[in-house]
Image (cartoon, rainbow, N blue to C red):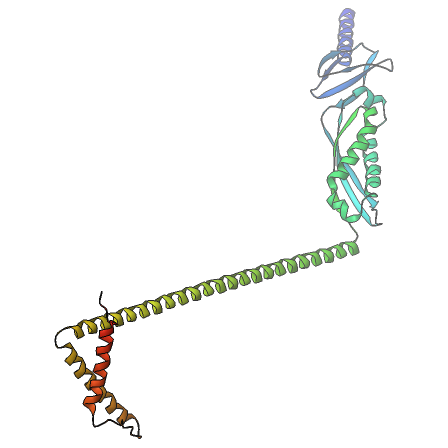
Length: 312
């Protein structure tokens, strides 16, 4: 009976020792092992056996990326405006030994260092630039914190500003300024539109004037060409008529026909003159119409004899 009790006690003791010495490290974790209070080794993921009552797991670290929320704090810009800024910082444990013995609490240290660095960086920017240069501000905070955290076995991956809160008077002033800028841009766009419209109208009027002048010039050319053609046609017809008259005078009986025609036209024109005026103009040889016709016929004979109606 006593032997059974001893065996049970030994089995329980062995189980306790096994529980104390067997360690399973999860994936993406690293444990720091201390032997008699001193650093012994860092265990990666897997199953490990420790020396009972001598070795122990002193620290446990997650190797995954950790997000730390930095509390809101007041910062003074270069132009002496107080703004409240909060953000988040992303860090990762790279060396478990340095994270265990390099600093007491790397999470608090990284948060505090990010806040102090942010205050210093914001002090170099004016208020308007704090909104425009967010990426640059984030980069400067990461560079400063990462440089200090390298001795802690920590890698600072990035920092992001979450929100920037301004005093209400400053916010109202900025809103008025933005409204004024929008109105200014609207006025500029309107004036540019009116200028473009005026330019387009003037160009249209210029094209219209050019087209009208070209049309007027073409019309004058056409009218001149028409008048020239008309004069040429009249001249041609007159020349043809004179040529035919000349041919008729050279034919038999042409001289008598011309004399008769001259007498008829003389009497006709004299009759028209008597109808159109109250003053009667009488030629001195009115009684001798035959003599007048004979005189005209004589002129025709002289012209014909001189060759003025030379036919081609």
